[in-house]
Image (cartoon, rainbow, N blue to C red; front, side):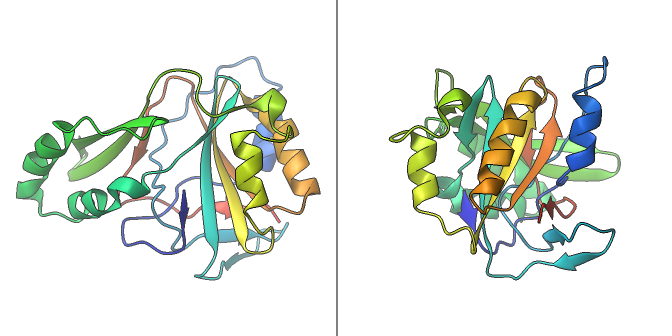
Length: 216
């Protein structure tokens, strides 16, 4: 998904370069509850290789992908953007009605099936957009990431490494394979951000979130 600005929220989690080395060499199972706001890039941060952070320019275009089952799958909800904005910014009393109306439509883009949910987190009533796998072998196999003609290769050719950023939500079964993809993309001049998520965890979006970090 590409979006330069949005009122819906911020991308959560960040570029955890050193953390990747830790979790891929540990015996434990990573269980991380992530609430990902994939619709906006406000407050996105850029890592300068030091603890100092700086705001990214507001015009940056971020393209988001999920890495699961050894495949790279686009995270794209643009075709229901109007419904999402309405839901995430609705009054609390209208949330369940909007969720029921939306869910009756069984919306899918072939990569994900979308659900609206109203969840209680502490004292907050939070509207959530849930990205559920649509099923089937969708996206690009990681083994074919550099092959001409693949879906991912075609998208990369349309991007400018100086203007476009790549952000990946990486499932815990795909850390090692993603490491290779990330290195190849950096060699091509792309800046890459990512966040880990457990293989069983649902991918969600809300109007709440924390800034993402992007590798320089």
